[in-house]
Length: 171
Image 1 (cartoon, rainbow, N blue to C red):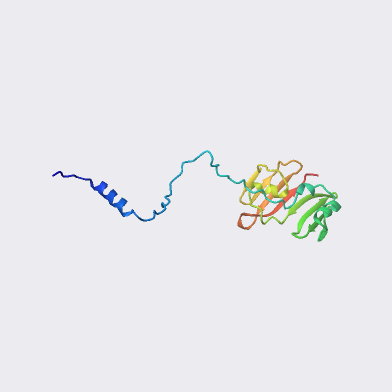
Image 2: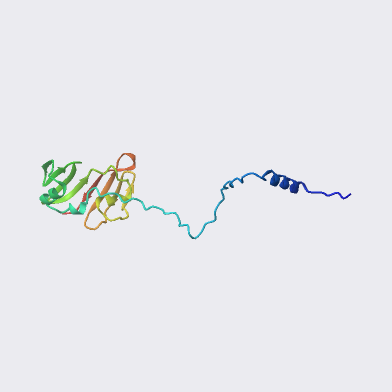
């Protein structure tokens, strides 16, 4: 008599094959695998930092006479004479414009609460991006912008700008 030896893995495979006979095959269970990067998959898109909405286009205001400023900002809620200048407040945020020699010389923009306190705040004033001349936790100041003597933004709560000060130039 001849003895035949079968390995244990072969027997296990045979039993599994026999156990599945006569039954409906089960669908394969999906197995998660790490896919290799392919050329057809695009690189993730890194969004650009948001450009702040323009709160006030200050270059449309500075250097303009009071009537033109009123046409842009609306009628002032109040005006007063201060030394040799006229100081007016405009609703709804009480932005301030000081007129010197009949022209808008200084502008204080108050509705800045949604603008981040950083160098991109210039965009909310309708100005092109520029590196500040001075920056610290108390103010960010630009003194080299064309047509302006100074632009300064001051911090408010939560890392946002409280208000901006814009000065046209020396007289």
